[in-house]
Amino acid sequence: MEPAAYLDRYTGQIIGAAIEVHRHLGPGFLESVYETALIAELELRGVALERQVAIPIDYKGRRIAEARLDLVVEGEVVVELKAVDDLVPIHRAQLISYLRAGPFPVGLLINFNVPILRQGIRRFILPTKPSL
Image 1 (cartoon, rainbow, N blue to C red):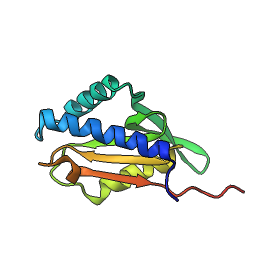
Image 2: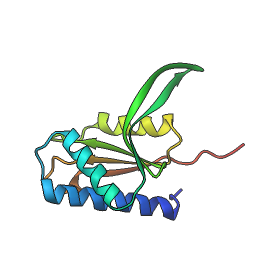
Image 3: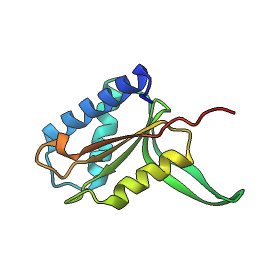
Image 4: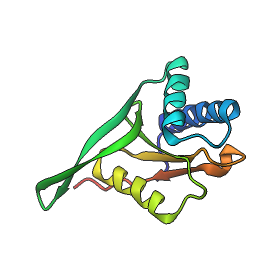
């Protein structure tokens, strides 16, 4: 099922802000630099976000740990940032696990260590579960 139009708008805003950051900084910095710059760019654009959001990880009804999400934008979109040579399957698995653990319908995996940022962006949408 396709996400609602507002989610497309949010992911578009995030991608536009990330492209602006990459245009100014280019590849080669640590992830934390890109995270701080992306936060600044999103704030300049009036986008609501939270940084390093803790979400609980439950196992068979027990709270066993918590995960830290790089960014949650508008309370709906998880943004996982990387500055690596290549995105590998564990990066995708990490974001999908975050989406499943929280109430988030869509996530963006953004790798800033690429010559053209569009090559480093992956969008993930979890199918909605039918209500009983």
